[in-house]
Length: 279
Image (cartoon, rainbow, N blue to C red; front, side, top):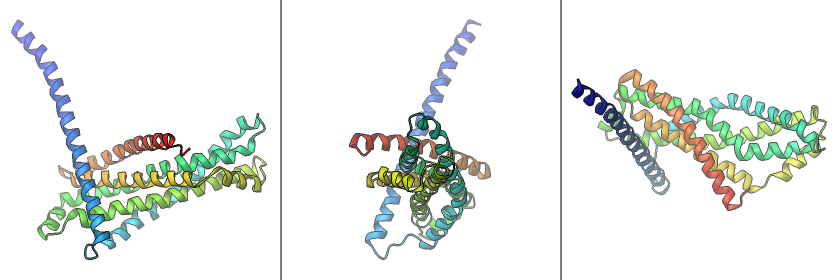
């Protein structure tokens, strides 16, 4: 009995250590795999820019832009418009106490262009693009289509992944800019109709608040977010194991990890821009 109890007490901590070790190993392998894929993507993009004979599948790029970008416009319009309305309605009462109702325009402009526009667009695009790319590539892995490409000496990163990552990154920049305009317009509507702010005053306050650094920080974030979504989705897609269940797991993992990395990256960028004085 004593021997059995001792074995049981030892086995519990050992299983815990083994589980933690497995998590660390798997996590390290995942990070390394994503990093190597990112290096390969950058290599093919650079070669396509320098060498004319190297192309990365432009038809796939255009198709992904339509699938990723165009189909996200409706949802981004609704969400961005709602954010502009909410910000205006929430900020007006406390500002009115100090006679600064027109400052609503300044707050909406800086909050949307620097943070909310890129961030909301990235989260929406994660659901549209990230899940779609992971599921599509995962299905190709299960159907052995990627192996068929490799058998014909066609690099999957070049012809499948690079077009998707580029389409996601560039679409992200355009969508973030569009989201900024929609949110600012929605705030203007509330400001002019409900808050009795003169249209000229609202527009002037918005223009005066924003400068080139604000637009650049937002666009840099948007480009980085798009690259994160495309890379994470592609890696999870080509790493699928276990058939249809693996495809579902890859899709879920893509959405969760992409949103987490987007928020952490946003924090890093904001801290760096603050340190550089771009505020």
